[in-house]
Amino acid sequence: MIRCLGDLAEKDVDWRDQALKANAVRYIMDIIEKSDETQVIRNATCVLSTLVQKKPLPKFELVQEAIPLLFKLIQQTQDLEILSNAAWALFHILDASRKQNSQVNSVYDTNICQDLVAHIKFYSNQT
Image 1 (cartoon, rainbow, N blue to C red):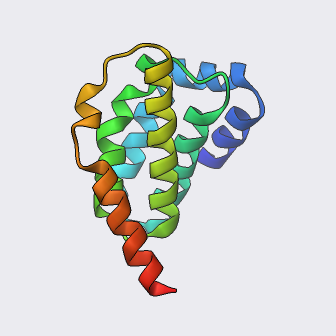
Image 2: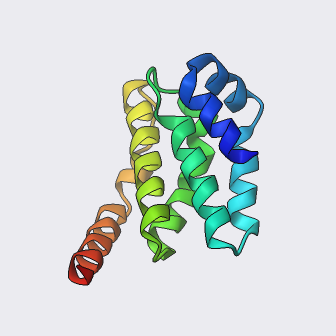
């Protein structure tokens, strides 16, 4: 069912915005936080990424609560698909915040770029 939500959000911005206004981000975060199954986390992270990437970008206040969870996923996962979707979701949320003049300086003060580079280094050594 969660993939269906992602497919709808991907097809139409109005559907995406309806899902965001209905607290889809919070419910997807709950799934990610409560699951210990990699495939479930993959699917949920993919849908979360889909919800925040379509142009026009969503309102920052509708998606900003996902930032701490995305940091956690980026810092802790060893799964390339989860990592990729979490990184893209974070990029789009930060892009929305910048374009909407939201204040997210604390995000830029973290070591998230160093964490991403460390993952890239790890995966480049795997190939």
